[in-house]
Length: 460
Ligand code: ARG
Image (cartoon, rainbow, N blue to C red; front, side, top):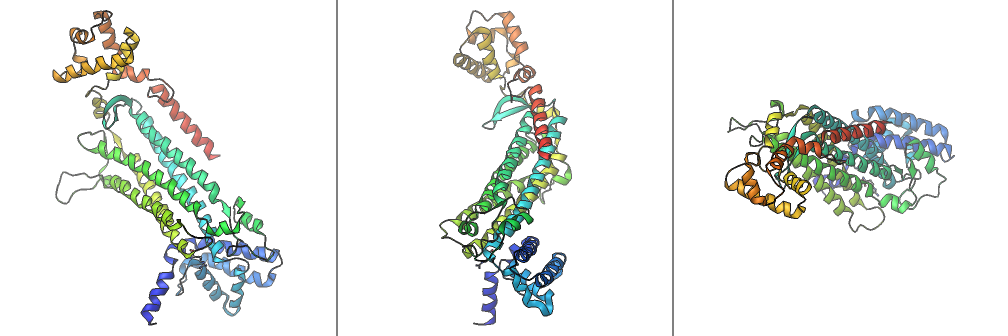
C-alpha cells in the first residue's frame, strides 16, 4: 500500500473533525473514571494521581496542542495524555480500564447534548420574550387574519404573533422531555456486555452530573434514540421558525407592507437598485432543510443496524453537530429579527377594510338577532357578498334596501339595520371574541400574562 492510500484510509476512518468538540467531556469523564478506579481499589492511588493531574492540565491545554494521530477524540485525548506523562507514558493506559470507546463516546455525546439542549432552551426563551415584547407594544393593532392565505377574520396582531410563542414553548417542553432521556450515564457498559471489574457506575454517573444510570449494557452502546429524539424536536422547532419567517417575508412585501426591517436586516440586489431582500429570513427558512436532512440522515443511519456497536454510528455526529449549530444560529438571528421588526400599524389596520372579513360576524348577527339557523345565515351572507362583488361595494356601503332584498325576512327593519351596522364592526367583533384563547384584548392580555408566569416559574 502506498502512502497516499494509507492516508486516505486513515482519513476515512477519522471522526476527529466532528468529535473534537467532545474533548472537554471526554477529559472530564476520564478524570471521574480514574478517581472511581482508585476508590474501588482497581488502580494504585499514586499512579492514578499522576494521570489525573495530567488530565487536568489537558483540560486547559487541549486546544493548543497539535497532534498527528487523529482517529477520534478518544485516541487524541489518550495520545495527548501519553505525551504529557512523558517517561510515565504507559500510565495513560489506566484510563482504558473497564471501559471502551463504545460506551465512552455515548457518554461524551450525552454530556455534550445536555449542555446544548439547555443552551437551545435558553435561546428559545429569549425569542419568546421578544415576541411578548412585540405583542405588548402593539396591543392596539388590528390585522386581517387569514386562512388559505385569503382574508378571513379580523384579529389583534398581538394574538396572531403570540401564536408563535406557544409553538416555541411547546418546543421547550419537547426538548426538556428529550433531556430526561439524554440525562443517562452509560459509562461502564464497556464494549457492550459490562465488565468483570468491580467498578462503580453510579458513582461515576453522579460525579458527571447524570440523574440516571442505564440498565442494559447492550442497549447502552447500541442506542442513538437520544440523538434521533433531539433532532426530531429540532426539526419541529425549525418548522416553526420557517413558518414564522414565511409570514414575515409575506408581510414585508410592499403588497402587504405590514412590517418593516432596518437596512441591516435586509440585503440589496446587484441588479435591481430598489430591492430590500429578506435574506436573513429566507436563510432561516432554508436552513430548516438542513435539520430535516439530518433527521432523515440519522434515521437512515440507524435503520436495521444489528446490535450492538457498529462503526456506522460514528457518523451520527455529523447530523448532531449540524443540527445543534443550525438551530442555535437561527434562533439567535430570529431573536434579532423580532427585536428590530417594526409593525406598520396603519397598514395593518387598513388590511381589515378589504375583503369581507366581517362576513362570519354578519352571519352570527343574523343568528342571534333574527333567529336564522347558521347554515341559512351563511347562505344569505354569501349572496350579499356576491351582490357586493358584482356592484363593487363593501358591506359598510350597503343601503338598507340592498340587504333587505337578499334577506327577505320580516323581522329585519330599518331599526335593526342601524343596530346591525353598529354591531357588526371590526372593533366590536374583536372585543366580543372573548372565548378563552380568543382574540379579544382581555383574552390576549390574559395569555400574555399566563405565558409570562410559565416562564417565571420555569426559571426556578
Ligand atoms: N469514534 C467512534 C464513534 O464515534 C468511537 C467508538 C469506536 N469504537 C470502536 N469499537 N471502533 O463511534
